[in-house]
Length: 414
Image (tube, one colour):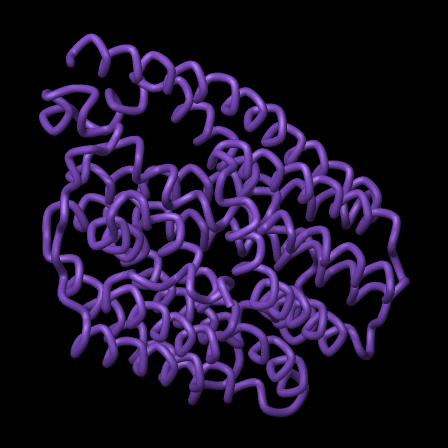
């Protein structure tokens, strides 16, 4: 029973955002099969698919920075609704177009506005949630995301061959449902908690720019390094994994990959409350470090599992356990390290650098896939996530030292 009561006591807005995330991701049928659309429907090679992803990623990079700046300067709720409306129009429009590079570019334009709102979404969750409830709030949001994704990839896999256009239209409708929920039931309010680490360390914090705040904390700087390399490697979930499965199963690859993604989401739904409760006394930094280790192990398992469906399922279980540990702590950890007025910009910067590293990882893994084969592509991905593991281990040590220094300052001040 405690699995669910641990989420009790959050604000009404947290539960509405949870429902909105379910609705949005229930219709998110495009992204699980995007690599296959480019590779099989439009005839792109792995390198060309990666190049397209990189170019579109470069297109998204300004959105991460602009979104963070706008989130700190303007009303977050209005920004989210404005971006959602434009995304809805573009997604549904693309569904009535013949499938082509142009229609995919229309989808990408819609995704630009979804990227633009992302820092505002995370910052709003941090603003409305007290520090001691923040990890639970991000855990609940992550749970909602995956409840919606349980069925979406499998349905997309079955629609892939004959009714692909429906995926684009359903995606737009789902975002519309989320927008209505946020518009009517979420109040955009900021609650600054003066007991937070970041607000107590220095009275001048709000007057500093985001880069000076990052430089002041070695733990935060290392965490950003770990997060960016981990996110770059994580992108192989939607890129190298479907290429791997499509190569092993040319006819049924889309359906198999859809089932793998659905298993990922199903495990998240079952295990996120349990893991959040079981590890609640472990520091955020340690949980993140353990998550990177699981992701590295999953990539080794994928390397060894080519053509073995059971192996894919074992690999995705390892991958998902790591994903849960990392995804539920990132938002809370970042929010605890900077003043409220700079949170949007911090989320924007981390999204920006993560997107850049993701492009690099996709390009080189695609190049290796086309020219040297899957083993080299997976080995490169393992190297990338290994950097994240090393940085995350250092975060645990440095974060503990910074917390000790912080406690000393508090005791002297009192």
